[in-house]
Amino acid sequence: MNTVHLASTLMAGAFAFGAASPSLATEALPAFVSQIDAKTIAVISDGDFRASTYRDGRLAAPSADRRDLLTLIRPGKRPSRVAIPVSNSVTAPPEVMAISPDGRFVYVVERLGQRGDSSVLIKDLAPGRRITAIDIRDAAKPKIAGTVEAAPMLESVRVSPDGRFLAVTANSAQDAMVQIVPTNGGRLGTPQSFKLGELGIQRKDGAPRGGIDATLADWHPSGRFISVNLNTRNQIFFLEAMPSADGNLALAPWGAPVDVGRDPFVGRFTPDGGHYVSADWGRNFKARDVEGRLPATPSRLSLIKLAPRERTGPAARHEVVASVDSDRSSEGLAISRDGRHIATVNMRETAFAPDSPRYTKQASISYFSFDPGRSALAKVGDYSFEGVLPEGGSFDAAGRHFLATVFEYANGSTPAGGIEVWRVGDAGKPGLTHLGRIMVPHGAHHIELTP
Image 1 (cartoon, helix red, strand yellow):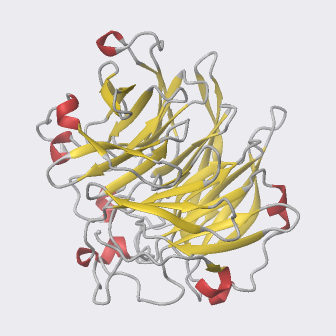
Image 2 (cartoon, helix red, strand yellow):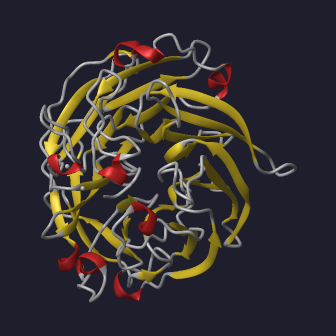
Image 3 (cartoon, helix red, strand yellow):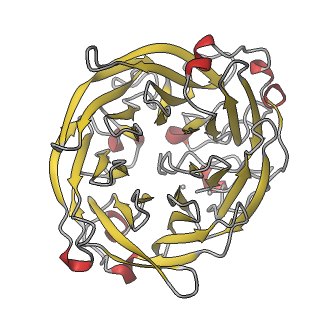
């Protein structure tokens, strides 16, 4: 969730889950965890923030229960979990974490750096620059494989389909850019920087940050193209990624930017590569507080039909073919591996003060069906649940379960986050059935699953 973080001290090595959060040490994993189709469930948590930080600017009080953590849960006959400290920030989109296609590495970026001993307010946190690679080949003993510093204010990270490159977005005070980082088996290489202004995105009068702001860059399933969400100018920009002689990549526009709904915060290519789905949050960037910024109307999904892959450069023509309401303040977006199921994670007004007339304990998941052959996107329904600041979400490999992170729970005696889990219906009975909750450290804000 965007708002203001640099240097961080990374502690290597994993530790037992209970050592990071004593209140969860004896928390048994629910029986339904064994049914989730994933080798590993990865959850990233920001220990510096509380939900109230967005209202008062004050960081969480330091404690053993509040640390920046990557939690790894292994489903199966004997489910287990461990955690490792990794600097990260909830102020970015949920996509601050990504898993390599082979499931061997997790990559995490920080938008704001970790707190120091004297950090009390958001403004005390310096801009984050660090990209961290975590080796999870042995999920019971994760370890830091490498780090590299990139441009400040890192917003997102995604891995290329062949696992060789990361696409990272960064919004410094001077420039918004896409950075391409070689992975080299967890040993991160030197980032290549591509400023949006040099790729043809010109400043836009009246738009926040001049309309040059990138919240997410993601890879097309072919690896040939990259999407860039320009949320302050309400556009999606597509780039072609071309190998260069030195083994790096060159980027060039793939068609003109596409106008979508207001504030396209995140998005996803469909697995067949024929469409791009943009989740348009709809915030008011001119507002000075949380209540003014978050919309009272539903967010929307914009469905973009992409140009044929053989049409490159200016000849490519992408077109919005559908727009469907989700629910209020949708942030996370997920598409199942078969492309038939789409879901958004909606905060609604759970971030507001309890005495606000707009406050609600109920967040929601909006669930959609998608027919790629007909470019048909249809909303099945909204599914409410209790949780403060839910953000990231993911389907399991079979598309039979949907999992969403919850930053914290209201009125909890001990601060904790969670994963809310639903079973996905079939064609005869579409929809979501809530199964229950997996407790994880406080501050959970994104989730990824390995197949």
